[in-house]
Image (cartoon, rainbow, N blue to C red; front, side):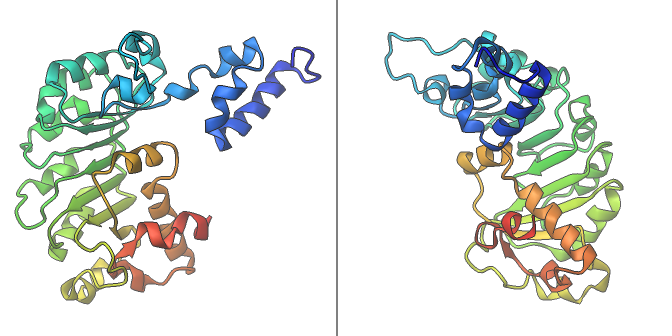
Length: 290
């Protein structure tokens, strides 16, 4: 490879395209030449899952061997999922080492308010976490100022009194609300109206899994004003770290939702689906609509 016939900028463009489609081959490519190592050494650390700890992510089973230092790889990390049994201090220390982080899965039993100081130093664009216990004032935290994609994993349409606070997120364009309960259809349109820049609203049910095609509810189907192409109703498994990692690597339910919306607007997908649960895995919209 040292005698490549291509100029460096063309050679890199070729490998950029190749690795964007074959990210798992990054560890092979960086062994081909020093320049490839310089260009792509960061790839294995672009998406990091620390829910089970650093040793599990780096597959280091020997207690005498230390995994790569977070101080070394932290600035490479763009997508991070963390939480589980880690305490606030440990999570905060890790986030402080990831200045280029823009997509965070904070699956922690601790309130997100505990992390406001460090989150305010980042410019997160995507966040997956629990937020139902926040006050309206806390939604106005600078920690959320840059969020375009919010995946709220503890939404309860019947009990959550602070839904209006979603309108205070200035950059929000994509919103997903996950519930273990039934959806209150009369809360859908007010959320759409409140979030003025909203392009995608995904309602996610964990109790409707396996009953794709079932109506979301009789009342929602009768509300003509809810015939909004931006509303997608997915039934799918949640709280699955592997699913989050797949989303971070590009196989995202956001992309599926966007393609369904484009299909509705150009007439290739009927509006009937607006009011029926779509099994995101079985329908494989990404493949059908690409």
